[in-house]
Image (cartoon, rainbow, N blue to C red; front, side):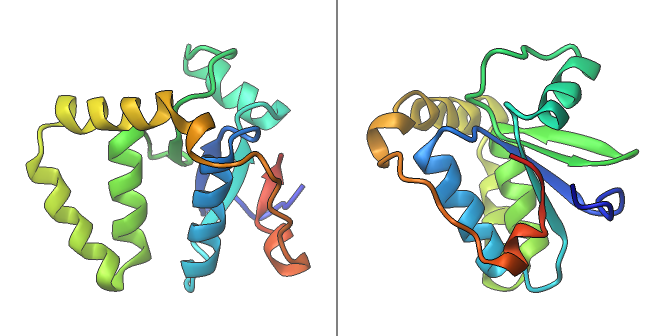
Length: 137
């Protein structure tokens, strides 16, 4: 387990989801400032995160972004924050904040509901350098 994660943004994702793994890879490729670490919701670390917040430990259709000792975000709020943190052109995603959260979360839920159909289930194999950014999978 990567020890230096307390000062990073932790992305919790469904480790069995092709769409989720695609987005983890997408973030990894754009994380030039080394701001993110990753853990699957199914891992012990992910289960502890869910349990400590009273969240369902058996449903993995939500992505969470956690900044230890500060906040955690879910669904569309997490996606928008990740894009903002990546900076550059991705900061334009802030325009998404004009969409009411209930509506953007509804879109997120629709994609989540169909995510297993949207991407194949092949596993992404991170490079040794990228592997250091995973807390637990």
